[in-house]
Length: 293
Image (cartoon, rainbow, N blue to C red; front, side, top):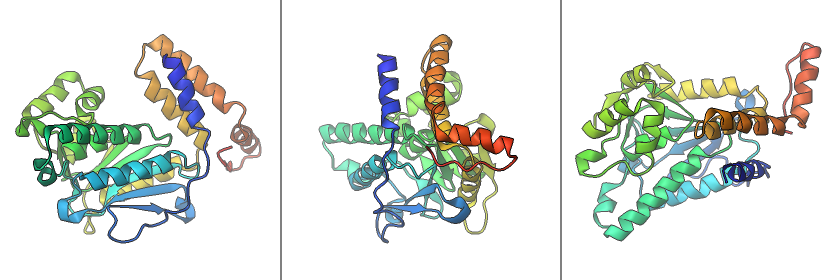
């Protein structure tokens, strides 16, 4: 069953071109999608843009996110995705509690299920995803950051899984992802206490990859995320995607099965033009030009 799912994942990674409806979406939309150009071509930026609610997850925001992710998953030209906030001082405040208050029990359950699936879809994007935390990432907002492959943070950014303060639990994957990043005991401490900590604390614990001092424009973590994405861009996109798949699937199983997963993923890169280009470029002492083929 596991290798059937892996084969399905590999089949899904036979990409078709992304619909060119997105470059920068019109102002007022809750998520802006921007394709960077020049030497940053291949970086796609998703900007959370709901300032009146601190980017909190509403039904509309979750629906919009779900639609964008469907298209992004099929996008062969996006080599790295950066998830950021366009709202100063906040990444995402979690669930929209004002909207939540008017929901029935059934509606709450359905909404949390949908949000959980959206974060799973972020996690399962074939290309690397970097979350840039320039402001508060709390509750579901922090769960969204945990669903990304890597995280950069401003040293003063506040974050945490605060749900137990509201007599609930992290319901969009936080109880599963945080213990896999940290030790289960430390994850339990942070969840049970609903502790809020800084980007500097998160870096010491190993939750974020890089921590930076905030700048005057309030986008230091974003700039660091783009810099990290630029390091990934020159590498073979199929190789990067297969490496992500091998790691993500491998950590779910025993080591022997993990070796088999690695073997299956390696087999996908052997017949590619990019692999041959890499060998030719090495022999000719030049930089390779990878096309994702």
